[in-house]
Length: 87
Image (cartoon, rainbow, N blue to C red; front, side, top):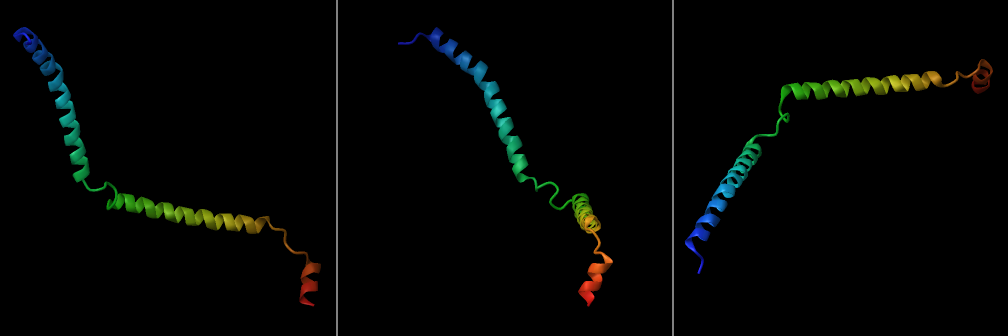
């Protein structure tokens, strides 16, 4: 049969360490529930959409410039080659 002093000691240790652990766990659970309830940030944000459109335009410009540079790097056909192709 356990002595009352042992039960009191065990209960005090459980309370001392159990209460902060439970508080931490419930706080974490509350924060996670709030995060899950919030809509996805940036999905309908007009600033984000504007930035995405600007990046899309910049990509198109880079692609166009890359094609233009590739065309400049090709050697121009010589006049004799052009004449031979024409006839």
